[in-house]
Amino acid sequence: MSSNDLSTILDIINANVSSIQQIYAKNQTSVPSLNEPYKPLAFEPELIDSTDLVVAAATQLIAMLRSPVISLVAAVGGQHIATSIGAAEATNISEILSEAGPKGLHVAEIAKKADTDGNKLGRILRLLSTVHIFQEIAPDVFANNRLSSVLASGKTIKEINEDGITNKHNKPGDPGYAALFGHSADEVNKAGAYLREYMTNPTECKSIDMAHTPFQMAFKPEGNLFTWYGEPSNAGRLARFNAAMKGSLNASPMNILKAFDWNSVTDGVVVDVGGGTGSSSLMLAKEYSHLNIIVQDTESVVKDGHAYWQREYPDALENGRVKLQTHDFFTPQPVQNAAVFFLRYVLHDWPAEKAKLILKALRPSATQNTKLILLENIVPYAIAGHEQKIPGEKMPVPPTPLLPNLGVVNLACYIADMHMMLCLNSQERTLGEWTTLTEGTGWQLVDIKHVKAATMSSLIFHPV
Ligand SMILES: C[S@@+](CC[C@H](N)C(=O)[O-])C[C@H]1O[C@@H](n2cnc3c(N)ncnc32)[C@H](O)[C@@H]1O
Image (cartoon, rainbow, N blue to C red; front, side, top):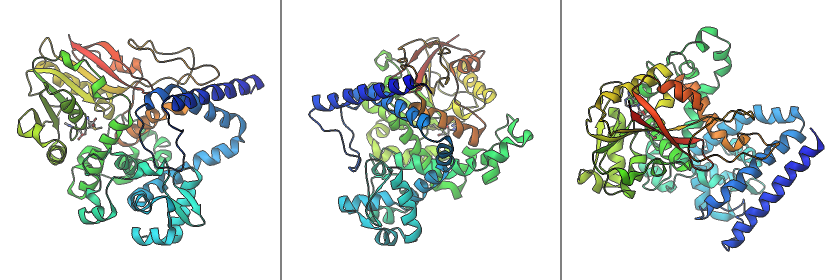
């Protein structure tokens, strides 16, 4: 480490903290306290660039200064933070503390409401408070804070008890974050516990078959993750997964509205292929009243989808502007008049050979004017000098000595890549991998759209 690096990093932090303070001052708002529940602010997009630089610089500073042994102790123990988040989500602690308000609640009372053990819960909440998720405001008294408040589903404890825990994530307007964290901390992290065994078993880890994953080692399912979700005993997990997809949509600055010039669609339908319950389509249908949309997915997901649209936007189903259709995307596409086929976070679920089949199954139904849009991560390298030549809006190049991918700022993309490896033997892809994957499928990449602070991009294709 050169002392130059240290002062450059400190300069980056100082300059960008000043910019952040100025943006708050211009908007006549004070910088929110870590102790307050999170409230989204209209001017948050203005804060992104500076916040990203502070986060990247501060994390790099910690890596430079802290004992590497202690850094790795913290990193390897991160598993306990993840599983504690899962336990807090499953026992509705954030909802209990939302109702308690700023005075918080003694852990004995929290445990009574959560029907769990107080001593163990107190230790879980103290660990989480130590990493700024919840706060301990007096010995054994805990309250929500900025981070823990986003673990709440939006339901009251009475509603959760009345509706049943498997329906926890169906409150209209719930952004889906609690479901996203619950899903990650449950099936994905249980699969993650087997990564060591997987990577030291050459037969397992060198396989490109979806039946060879850490997920299979953990759960021993009959089929893959999606057929497993379709089993009746996993109805709660399926509902949570569907809501988690809504959470991933709301958490990412790149969404379907920014993916394409939707006003250019004057004829034909928009098909949301593997659309889940249709959270992207809901956003699209609400914003663009001229669009007719078909959401396609498997039978069990379409069933949940009907309930979702009945809750969120029943008119769109009733007047026929939005239709939900059971369709296996490995079979020929039934819609022959599509203006757009869009697939959000679908191909990342599949190894390359299967992903190619999904694209090929769309091609015969495309007209000359049909566009294909993939909403997917483009994985940045973590090394300078190898930036990918991505067309469209350029990503800002971070100042040295920061990592060119901004380090933990884009961690979600690399975490998603691990989810794919663990559960589906699939992956997030670099631009080169996207180009190779789509070759020979009958589709040609013509444009890529990005938004700030997102590795998720919109890749736009024409038929060839
Ligand atoms: C990661 S989710 C993405 C859902 C949605 N596109 C979104 O962004 O919220 C992948 C979806 O593919 C669906 N899927 C899996 N296998 C399928 C198949 N053979 N045919 C159609 N959909 C399938 C899953 O049920 C799931 O809803």
